[in-house]
Length: 388
Image (tube, rainbow, N blue to C red):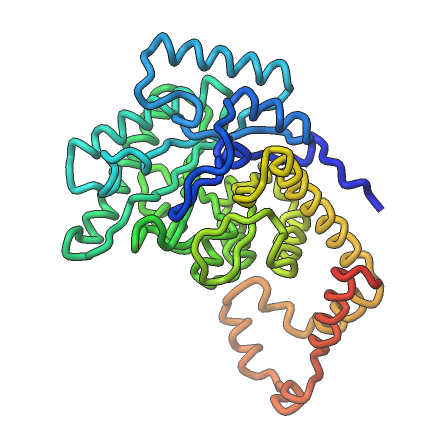
């Protein structure tokens, strides 16, 4: 059994906004004092994380002067150097300031849309300066409460125009950077454009530079819509678009809970970790989660440790599943193939169609075949419950 201590090769990252969350919610004021980005970096180094991610204004206040900005960034870079923490991903806050109350890229006001582009260009420059290779776009205010106020076709077009503009900006600056769209169905808007992984994947194919753009799926966001997160991640992987991933936990159909990874949906998170490890996902394992509002910063450290520890536990369980002789024998039985229809693996041809048309297939036998999924699922549960 492992000691479940994280290593740099695990690529575990947290956002400044995660361990730095002060416990405020819509019904209550902050329960923790603000700590600085430098304090957060050193905390993450202490608990064994590999990287830290940030919005522009997590680090640099929105009203900072240029000289203030440069000093803040210099101090932050020193903390990164001193701690060994890296910055793999950056993003822009296009949702907090009142200017973005009706969206940023999709606002009805062209002045707001221009400001959102300007702010994002500056934030991309910051991300590059800190070493980021992935840039995430979460459209927190990109949506509507009433479709009388904003035509969804206009919203999609404006989003496309913004992404096309920013892709060209990155190319023009010769930056080594890719974009990842982060879907979410609702909250804080009643309806957010590009609400699921599938919507985002379809949208990307309409862009001028689809090769530069992928997705950043989040556990909580797909669970809010009652969807199977692992299926969405698999579709993104199959499309070559899994550029980044946000790990947390979330009960189906609730508000955005952002719980510690693995704290609620253990079975679902097991399948997710198993998928990522089985396919060899090499990107960051980013924890976009918050400690309970009742926690002090000592407990926040335990929260961060817990996210990483649970991932490593589930990674070990996945390896155990893959090595379990009884489980693998069941999978071999379920997937038994005598090769009779291997000719279909090459796709359609006139010969394949003719051969298939003349094949004798016993429909009744197909219906009578036992598929021992109950046994397989129980064995999976026993692996997770630690009795195998």
